[in-house]
Image (cartoon, rainbow, N blue to C red; front, side, top):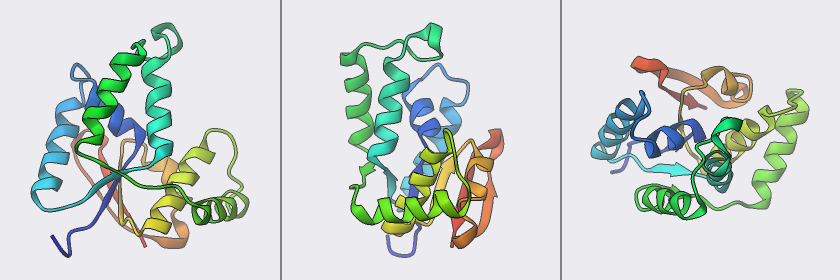
Length: 159
């Protein structure tokens, strides 16, 4: 539906979507159902997919889900049926490189900078995340209003 914004799902959203016993699963599912009914395109990136795979296959004693490769693959296939996986390209790298230098990004935040770069390149207007602070500084060059939902779910609208 024209006019409805596109949404990038942060990896924390993908993880909760796949884990039905997570306390925030219903919140995420309801938010996505509502956005889809309104005609929004729901997207993720190859970066989200690799982060998702990492957490799903990591042992539980190392803060992962402890799933097998087969279980993880099945969960990812279910996500891929409803979410557009955007392609990587060289322009994302160039924007990412600019963001990490301009904002002094280091450590795990480099992954969020890559998502911000992908949003910019693909014209994605919103991100659905539980980690609002991770994206604020990165979106300064093109950040606008944000809307919070209960449970800390946020749709941020970068400019």
